[in-house]
Length: 297
Image 1 (cartoon, rainbow, N blue to C red):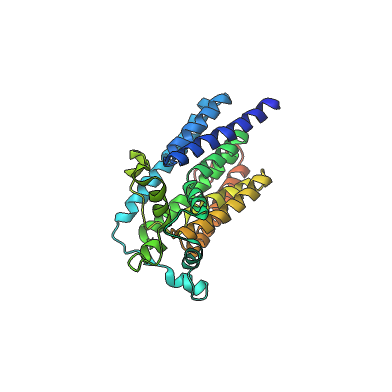
Image 2 (spheres, rainbow, N blue to C red; image 1 turned 90 degrees about the vertical axis):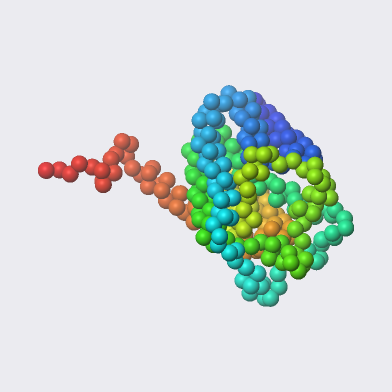
């Protein structure tokens, strides 16, 4: 019992050190770096081969989604303006404007800018690290979580493809009303020294992939799948999701309606994947689906 606990504590410190140094040095935290760090932990657990076997297909599909997300911005569909819907929901006000007017100071780097940037940058590491926790304890639970995550990403891609939407910073950039705080803060801290790997920069992220918000959906989905097995982790992830939602609205990257739609996609993905999983678990081992069975004479 002592060794797994030591490995767990050591792994947390190891990941915190790596991600902390990357943020300090201005290195973009991308999926490939997260996976390499987790591979080291898997090897320490004596499960390096099974990690490669279980995570390989997921990572290939995840990177494929990222590549397709960039392609979705080239379809020619005009981005939709969701500011009207946002004002309708909030009685004529825009939460992004309210937060930025109250807390953002363009001439300085404020603590809230750093905190919001941190939650934004943890977009990729969080679901992968949580998936790793599931994988260590139950490969079946990990596979269901990954299936829901990829299904949700697919639904989001279809939405981005046929119904792109402009984030607040883009919709109001001509009026210089909403600041793109993320880019401004990165420039203040690192300037041109901020490092993005050629692999990710060539994926061409889609600036109109705002509705739904996967920044909010990823930790929310992780919270849903942690609830039945790791209640303490789920509660922490619910708090994390709230912090992410507040951060991305403050940064001007998403409307609140983007966040709410992300939560809807979480619900749809979870319901579909769990329904399929229950149906498969009820099927006797080796049973042939009725549609494929040979009819009797």
